[in-house]
Amino acid sequence: MVTIKNIVVPTDFSEAASHALDYALSLAKTFQAKIYLMHVFEPIVYYSDAPMGMPDLIELEQNVRGVAEQSLQSILDKQIKEHETEFGTIPVETILAQGKPFIEIIQTAKEKNADLIVLSTHGRSALEHILLGSVTEKVVRKAHCPVLTIRSTTVFKMP
Image 1 (spheres, rainbow, N blue to C red):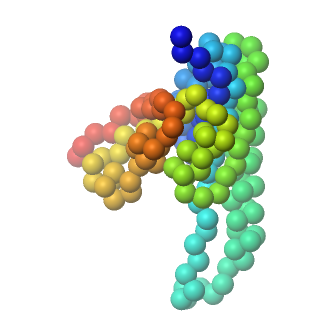
Image 2 (image 1 turned 135 degrees about the vertical axis):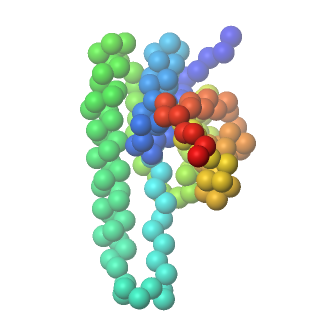
């Protein structure tokens, strides 16, 4: 029998990520699992030859971190509470990490002994996928545990 005790759920605060969290919450209730809700923000890159002068990178990074913390708290206050009203208490721990998203997601899954990673796909076109890459694809290829990908509820059509 498959047992799931720890589920990592990365979010970029998009509607698609919210949809994936709904799936994870349902699974967590079914299996009495813990959810690790995480957000990864990339380091701010500053080019020394930029014509605008040197921004305060520490303050900028603190602002990014603050917005991410508020957004995670908002998910806890709204979406998680809504599920708990319907299904009962679900243990959720939030994680805020800085780095390359796919690396941080995989590392967190290992550290938390995740049995499953649940994340959304954004349904990009082939050209966008080639140019931008896919965090989801990299996680699927490199994760040590199963990965459940949830397709975005928004349907993208080729022009």
